[in-house]
Image (cartoon, rainbow, N blue to C red; front, side, top):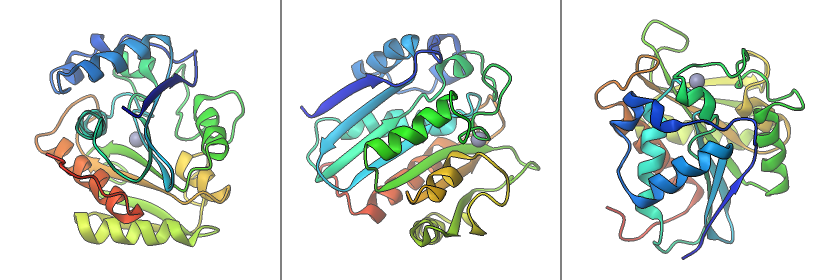
Length: 243
Ligand SMILES: [Zn+2]
């Protein structure tokens, strides 16, 4: 089996099991338990497969956005042990402590606005993307109705990484998500992991599905899962025997 787990930040550890709403929806498998156990010590990074392309899927950077965490844990369990060409890195529980408390912020800060600040977990993830030579990044979130963006959508940008726009366009068309494209990364707001990755030359998108914060709207994990599968399709990672 080609599976490797590491902890990338020790400050973020938390008890995922205390988030009852999330626990009700997480697929009950040994690997889920392993991830939850590892999250006590920080942010777990799980590597599956090997070779190129090297891609990463992230969820839980906002601890109270539950649907993408549910779908990424499902996807991990499904592809674990299956054959595919390429390396799929996953960070399903980016900030276990915030997930435990079902909150957006971590120690008072929004981690998807802080990726440029050294010492933050999102900056650690950004540095990791560079050191792992990641070819494409997808960061998964959920959004409340009547908030920003409030609709199922894909954030991307054209400069300096045109590839971000190409991924965004494909995901938008194949998953009925609204495309929200900036001409230049980082102009809508500062410090989103996606923007900072694009500015560093690593193509990235942010994928949103609609669900209330701290809650799991019916069907929302399936929508997020669909975005994840289409992202893998786009980068050319074909997984056989998937359920
Ligand atoms: Zn978010």
